[in-house]
Length: 72
Image (cartoon, rainbow, N blue to C red; front, side, top):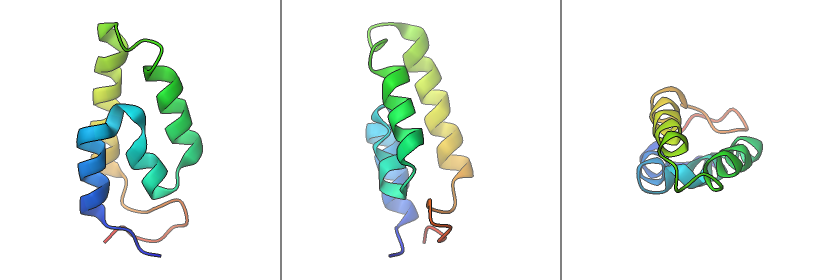
């Protein structure tokens, strides 16, 4: 099933630190890694800053889901 790039971007903007956008696109390992990296350090500035950069990179570079289908 083809997924929407707009939904992916909105999920990344609003729930990016939790990796929800990666779950949506089917990147389960990447999403779990993102949760494990960000969640324990949520009170620290550096992990949150790294997560924001990670989300921006995802928004700019991810154009296909985990099955190789282009996000529309």
